[in-house]
Length: 326
Image (tube, rainbow, N blue to C red; front, side, top):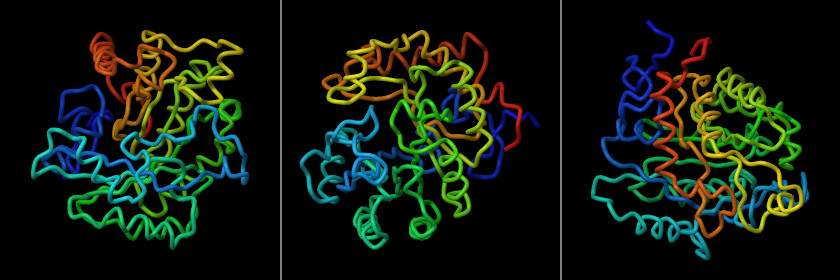
């Protein structure tokens, strides 16, 4: 049996992209296969902070992060979690009675609070019968056994439970540039700790960080593939308004990847990924009102088509260069 095959929910091995014909294992296709309907994420801003902002680790935050902390516009100015979720549901124009939803704690660090507060927040989000999953975005330095025991209790059959972990890179110099306030070693430690509780983890990485070489990016892919990682969100280095990164760019004018460069590096990266890792995102996604550079990233459909065309031209797919076990 070829190493580039993967285990599906029924215990059978199939090729990456089995559900859609894509050359990679796309998370949206996995969800449709599992639930036989469309599944949408409902972004939630729980009003929590971050140790890199409140003075615990730092006070300025990551240089790419705005004051909204990756929050969705649908959560802007809305206080309660239930109202945020209802507002998000109303933005989906093609929903039907079979549609399911995942409560997605997105903004800032959603494990950065006492356990009793976190439990109340998670329970409120899961009070709706339409919700079939829970995704919790956080940082490697906001993970503890006490918190993982809480999250583990939500694990059940036919329920999507994920921790999204912003690791960004496995190069410490890049993490210093981004002002992350944690090391690559801390990321590895947290991923392994989460694995002890049998909770799927989705990591966030950035390609094209100033100062990173092709070898640096591929090393990040290789390390991720060696760890108990279940999913990945891949972002391109981009600049949004009102961030420290904008200020740095205005002074240094460092190079950002062109579309061609990003597609090439991304395909190289995915070829090295373990084939059972689900890909949740192929690029950063920002509204054109807040995005400064690069402008090509406002054309998401064009970018995704370019990625699929590149794989087709190469005749390769996710895991093509992966030589390990899974």
